[in-house]
Amino acid sequence: MSPRALVTGGAGFIGSHVADALLDRGFHVVVLDDLSTGRRENVPSAAEFAQLDARSAEAARLVREGGFDVILHQAAQIDVRRSVFDPVHDASINILGALNLLEAVRAVATSPRFVFASTGGAIYGDFVTPPNAESAPKDPDSPYGIAKLAVEHYLAYYGRLHGIEGVVLRYANVYGPRQDPHGEAGVVAIFCARLLDGRPLTVFGDGTQTRDYVHVKDVAAANVAAATVALPAAGRLDLRAMNIGTGAETSVITLAETLRRVSGRPGRIEFAPARLGEQLRSAVSVAKAQHLLGWKPACTLDGGLKETFDYFAAHTPQSVSA
Image (tube, rainbow, N blue to C red; front, side):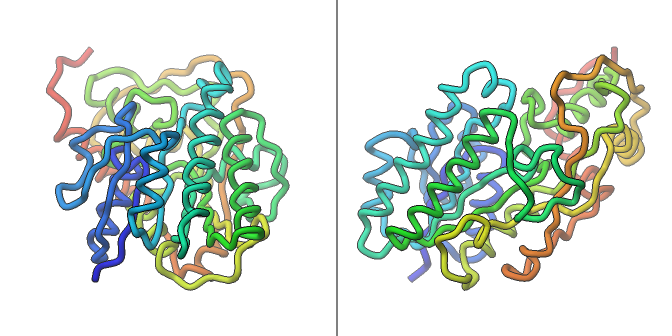
């Protein structure tokens, strides 16, 4: 019998790739998504689909009765700016949604493994020199980062008191096909859309701020490993938390120039005032994921950006250049 996996947020950008990768590994996949930001067409045809809010009683019932071997919790409110504007809304989804599922897992006789999608940028901040290891100090300065870290603590608690087998994946800046070009979290997608539309690429500040850009297929592969590989006992924060990135810093200006080159589009770069409170440097060490999961990123930045641009070029209606 095929192992059963529940992917919350599986109609979204990252979650749909996770569902694809699990299906490729022979899992029976159930996708849970309320479609508030996800798209029904992103759900793989071979997966079951349940249109539910992760905070709902129906979602908890699905966890209790679904017979899952693993739950991969990708569903989240991902807009950092919205979390600042409305931290209650952010906490309602990002904390209470996870707690609803964890309480349901606690009620299952044989608890499924719980893989939680956390953040490798918003947790660490500008307090240490990148690339940040998992043990680096954590003092997030956005409600989004605070909520992700809070769920990590809850997951450690559930491991200690209730024996739930939790795994935390702290994502760097994920990019790739299906990313929302209209969202705050998708600079690569935004740049692709602007190049296709003939608009300039807007860089805030001087463009020297750095991020660790990891392709979504590499992230999906890390989730499959986290769902299947034997790991040390749970129960302590950071023990089963792993960064998922590349370990390399790429400046925003380098990202824009690389994307122009691999796309063959001559879009110009324009500068805008720096955004208050923006993190200056971000990259994560991936040595722990390599050691515990046998995982390492496979996509080069050039190759990943070219694949992403080609995806948007194939899925974007042609428009007249500005």
